Structures are given as structure tokens and as C-alpha cells.
Amino acid sequence: MDVMIKAIDVNKEYRRAGAIIRALADVNLEIKSGEFVIIQGPTGCGKSTLLNVLSGLDIPDSGKIIFDGENIARATEDRLARLRRMKIGFVFQDFNLIRTLTALENVESVLWPTVLRTSEIEDRAIAALRDVNLLERKDHFPVQMSGGEKQKCGLARAIIHRPRVILADEPTGNLDPESEKEIMDLLKEINKDSETTVIVVTHREKLTSYGDKIVKMKDGKIQSVK
Image (cartoon, rainbow, N blue to C red; front, side, top):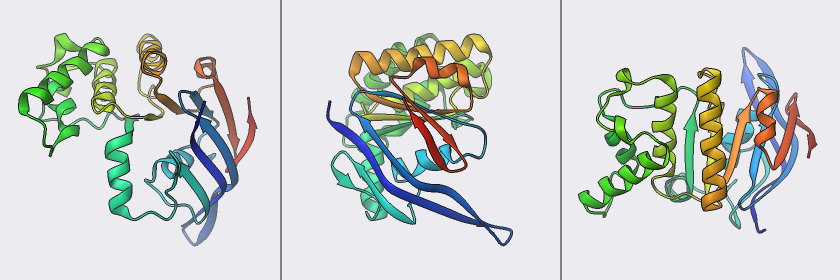
């Protein structure tokens, strides 16, 4: 398999209340195209920061992030925005749905603005909702959906533009055990069916069973890769 993302000697620091916090310390990681990667560790270990720099949402202080053959650590914000729009789907712990839009409209919103016809946007959104078993709720607003249904909507939104990579930051953190399993099973299914690279950040040890590659983090460092 080709290398999809590679972090090389990546460091990231933050200043909080006058103190320097080293969020990432000399991180090196290689993720191949089509892999299902679990980045696991306790709260505050740097795993979400790592996810952010892998996607260009945050810029490392030093080191390189090679994304699909391009070093994005020094890319312009316009270039990063285009890369995220074209190649990355995001899934968030708190869903990040727009309250005033229906499930269908929330999924469609990822493609706005676009040169696609309105009918094509709707067709893609319906297909994405069908893929995550949420089509029957397409006309419901977020307030009318359960936590699991909201996350299904978030997942449909992440796949509508057919990304190369899905990045999921604690995607089951607000879900009950049954919904957690359903979301993780859907992510695994998308990974296998479309060969989409999936990277999941979680503090939950039991979710490592889903991964092809398990990355353990502590104190801003990678402890092991299996």
C-alpha cells in the first residue's frame, strides 16, 4: 500500500497560563492508504493535537507532515482549506450539526458552494444517508435525533464528497454502548468497502480492536505502534 500520511520529527508546543506545554514531542508516524488506524491514549496525551496537524487544522512548530505526497506543514491556508475540502472527511465528538438544518441539509452543506447541480447534491446526500442507515430521518432536525443518529448524520456528512481520509476525534465519546458499536462498525465498513483511510482518536482501550494499526500515545509522545 502507498503511504497516505507521514509525520516526520513533529513537535508542537502551546503556552497556557504562562507555562509551556509540549503537546507533541518528536513524533514520527506512517499511515498507509486504506489503513484503519486507532490513536489511543489518556486525555491530554496529545492525540487530538496529532490529528489536527495531520489534517492541516494546526501547524507543527517543527517537522514535516507529508499528506498524499505533499508537505502540508508549510502550506498556505488557502491550500490547506482546499486539501481538507477535497480529500478529508471529519467526524466530531459533539457532532457539529447545524441546528436549523435537517439531516439531509446538514449533509448537503459540505458541498456548498459548488458547481454541482442541486439535484446531484441531493442525490449524493441521500446516498450518503443510506450508506449510514439514516435515510428515514433525512427530514428531521438535530433536536429530533438521538446521539447515535446525530453521529450517523455527521458520518454521512464526512463521506458525501468521497474523501481519501476520514479523521474521527472521539467519535463515540457522547454515545451509549450500542450506538458506539454501530458507529465503529460503519467506519470499518466504509474503510473496507471504499478503501478509505480512517484515523480514529479515542481514550477507550476497547476500540483498539477495530484498528489495523494501533498507535499508543502518552505525554505527547508515541509509546508504541502495532
